[in-house]
Image 1: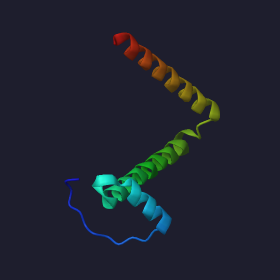
Image 2 (image 1 turned 180 degrees about the vertical axis):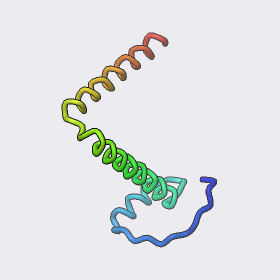
Image 3 (image 1 turned 90 degrees about the vertical axis):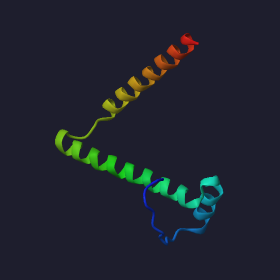
Length: 87
């Protein structure tokens, strides 16, 4: 991270802190926690976007969700098939 940093004091359950420290690797606990917070902010932003879209267009139905999952699965199959034939 090339952005300026600042030191903060946070409190979290010990078992979570120990698990994070064990997984943080050479980048360290601070980098691990910063990445986790950044992912949470992205999720929060996406949830806000979904709320705005649903307020404007109505909620997404289970059928629409399944249709998009099917499209994604088909695209992944095609992509892996293309990669196998190119090799």
